[in-house]
Image (cartoon, rainbow, N blue to C red; front, side, top):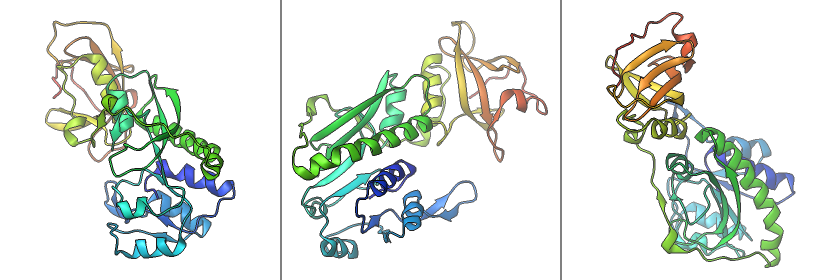
Length: 304
């Protein structure tokens, strides 16, 4: 069970290892991108390449067609990765070996919908994946194994790709132990739990009163989707890449101090930010050095 690109490597690795996959469940196809064209979910595309049957329910209940099919299949195990919806107890209780989830954080930190984004926003030095048994609570189940990676200056898109591969490798490494009943089962310390709520449009709006370091993390946490944004002369401008520059607390936050091939130098609440990649409405993301060849950005303009 999975929906986004994050789930595709797990499906691929299980197929490569020869596991029988009689059914893939993913969310319904939805409109995407600027044209709002209805596109199939990434997991559906991969499953159909393998000739695996796909079901796309809006919801799952005890009496649903999905549950009828699952009872008929009587799976040994159900693997879940970035499915995007809570699952009913009847489904969680169905497989003999349990429902196993690949979660993109080092639990119990960052339970919930947007763990990678929140790890970047919080300034954590590392994140990772946790393989866990699913329970009725949100990402509260017992842990089986974890793997960590440094965050560095990676974007959420880069970390999603890295963690998807890491989680898929961890899954096929641990599946034999799950099958034999020798896998670890480590209870989470719920007192240490934190929650990573779904990213909203407001989370993407840049507040230049914040420290430059905080804004730089925000830009990475929103790249490539949904894109951190501000306004220039009343027009939305997305920011996709930036560097923290030297401290300067005397300028108006959001003030454009310089424009060059290096980027747009903007004052923050503390420090300066050199914005190097932007996107204007109806256009593709572009480096500032390319944008200013045919467009003017005035020094002295205040963003926001």
